[in-house]
Length: 376
Image 1 (cartoon, rainbow, N blue to C red):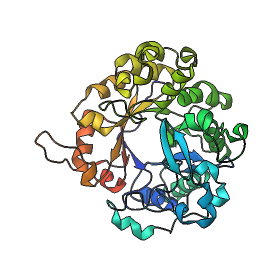
Image 2: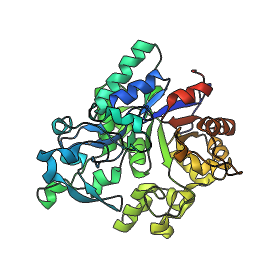
Image 3: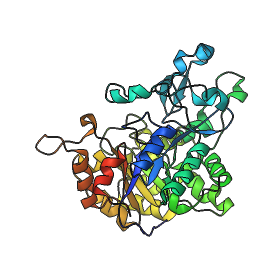
Image 4: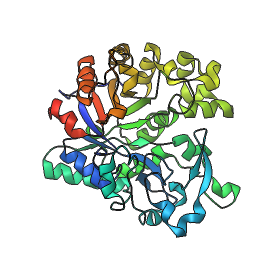
């Protein structure tokens, strides 16, 4: 899906909103991000029991809400297997939207961002529809287009593997395509302008489904971004490997039918559970991604800065792909290290990657990004 970059400057994507200053994935965090200069706001999407897309980084709720404090919900605590990992807690898909709207959001990392604790208990979990309404409102108010950059979270879990809490074994299956639900919502809200949208995922199959099946049915073509997790670390969890590939291989699915030539370029059938994002860091795979389904890749900044590597950016651009990079945070816990052992500032990281050709930046602090990236 070779792109033509009509933007003179890299884009600024507010990672979960202005999450350096407000609890993440709230309307208040998104609105502040827009006011601080973000071009796009990024909602991670999971689904409710009644099939509504909401913004949470994961479907487990206790890390970012007060659900554990609500007596009426105490009996819904359970254990689930998500992307190969055992997780205890309360899960979005086991609550209706009305129930979730009674919860209040809290800061995810209070030790690192104690100033955000003052907002604990103040904000609701937003729906995707509410986020779209906000983007439309701020576009009118500010006179510049505000885009949305949603990520489908755990798409294999929701479509194939996941179960609701309670009920019979058959009733338990969630069986929801996040991609289909996302497109349905965008069409309902009349928000399908491809210049104001990117859809991203760490998994492959749901992006292929979007490009080859779901979007063509409606005559729309929203640019897709293939996220890359770590290409540096061992393949220990879903940040190092695409979970859908692992699941489908273990299931004995016809991976050639699902992934096409990716099977050959990455030797998927031979690597089995050892497949990792590092195996996707090559020219053949990048050309396959560009030719088949995506307009860009989203890359963990450490893949480029630790150690410094420009080849992935050059190879992606040669294949006709945008390169968007995540995540830029101001706190020293998240900064990369220079060769002399000192920390780079967030501005130094961004400046270095601008010079390397990166086309977009996911950041928790859009104002700092805007200091060095003018509004186009």
